[in-house]
Length: 282
Length: 233
Image 1: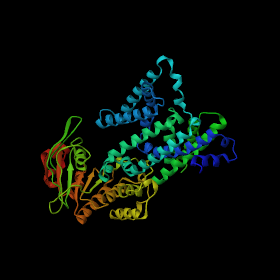
Image 2: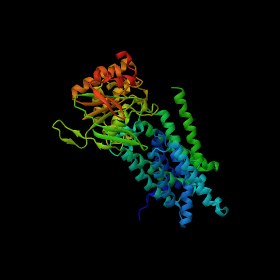
Image 3: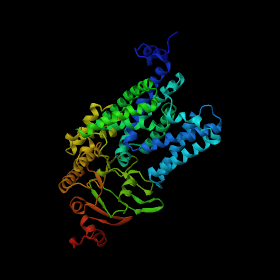
Image 4: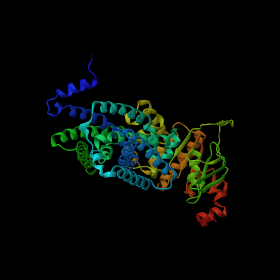
């Protein structure tokens, strides 16, 4: 019988002369990092360019309510309720923004405060909140083979959708009216991207953590912005920074026995600070 | 445009707009802040819901359902820090291939051809944020002319650009309008320059207050009061 791609992966990585490569959970975590990092790095370019950082932060925090809904519905795995709620939240924020009743940051701030509080109130009933604190910092090392396969599928679909809508998003970033005059469905592209971002952030949460996931979206793109002169450079640098800091952070967290998500963020922050030199010293 | 009206947050911002734009003619829309000039542009672009009719007719007066509209936005609406090159703007507009994966040789050629129409070919690889106001407007005009549109719409294209930049831009626009027989709608505050380059002028204050040749409109008492044009009397 032929080996599955996952078997081949384990065999290839375990042949590396490093202590961490001998552990199955590290090999799976590395694969997860190789799948999630470039995706977050790519999406982050549009998040940074479109000033959506507060929105993605709100979507991450809203996971509390998604989990709470899952608990109320008696779901064994709250992921579906988290994704469903993140999408409802995205549409709600888009609706409030479109009505123009509130500025974006006020609308998002209000919705975030409400969803975080609602989630915490429901989950803390009976003093049981401690069960859910692992969502705050995430646990990359607990990822299973099945989770990795799901992440791979998510990565392929998300990357496809992202590339289809990329040009429309780029024009909308520069000028919404210009985008409208040049392309069809420019407004729809932004909504599709917001929904895509909500799904990807929510799916990555259990492994990276609610508190730090937004940094993994923002930092590689922010660093790339300091280095790039054009769109291809921005995109390429962001993915490269996300990948390198993801791998370095994962391995550092193994030796330092620290939370992986937060360690990756520190590595990305170090790279971002280095790229600032490029701006200061032209 | 016939009987066009638009509301924002329950307030009527535009009403009873009957406006005919002709090929080869530059129509300037003037008005005070909040008069509905940008709303008019957004209605024409299909960006804002409105009542009334907007029809595009070709030379034989046949209705065109999806005309090509060239649009030049205000340059100060652009993010100066964005790592986007002039070529990226053209690639995102002209090609289905995502600009983040690089730009093909034919798209680069098309971009250069478009930029050369406005003497901006040398700017193709420059970062958009590094361009001066005048340079950026020539780039955006070149983009709006690729492909050559049925109607060209410019919204305050010269705000913040110096006098010589404005003269150069309007001279170029005037030449291109004749060369491509374009219908041009231009929103601007720049009355002195418009008086020389526009064929028709429309004074807007939620509705069309008066229209005619620049000389007729600029001598209208209501326009002179709105813009304090005592020097023209």
